[in-house]
Image (tube, rainbow, N blue to C red; front, side, top):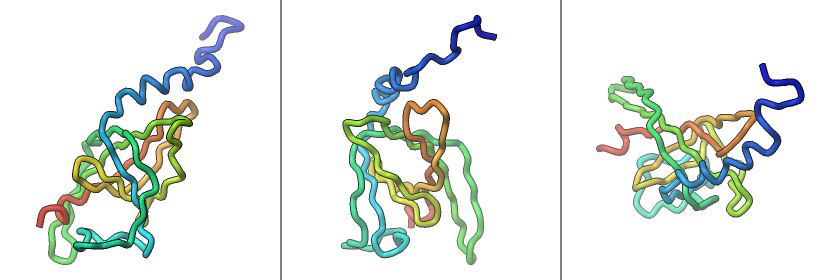
Amino acid sequence: MPLPGYKVIPEGWAEHHRPAAASTMTSECTVTRATDGPAPFPLPPGWTGSQTVWTGNCRLQQHNRESAVDAAGQGVELRRHLIAFPYGLSNPLPVLRVGDSGDVVHINGNAYILRQRLDASEEFQHDFIAEENQTQNNP
C-alpha cells in the first residue's frame, strides 16, 4: 500500500522510460500492407501487390509458442514472436492491421504476419504478436 498522497506509478512514468525501451530496438524492419487482399506466401517473384506503411527500428523476440498441424496432407509449423515498435513522435507508427489480413513485418530477411496487438495502461512500446510460417519459408 503506497503512502498517503503518493502514487505507485507517477505521472509521465511511461513517457520517461520510452527512450530506454527504444534503445533495445536494434533491428531494421519494414511493415508492408497487401493492397489486393491477403498476401500470398511464399511471395511470387516480382509480386507488387503491397505497399510499405512504415520503416524503422524494432525488436523481435521468439514467443516460445509453436504449433504444428496437418493441413490438406501437408505439415505446417507456425512460430509466434513478439515484435516491439518504438512509441514516439519522431517516427510514429500508423495503425497496423492484425489477423488473417494482418500487415507483414520484414526483419532480418524473414516475414512475420501480425496476428494480435497487445495493449496496456502504461505503454513503453507498441507490442504485437506475429506468426512465421516456417513450412512455407522452407520448401
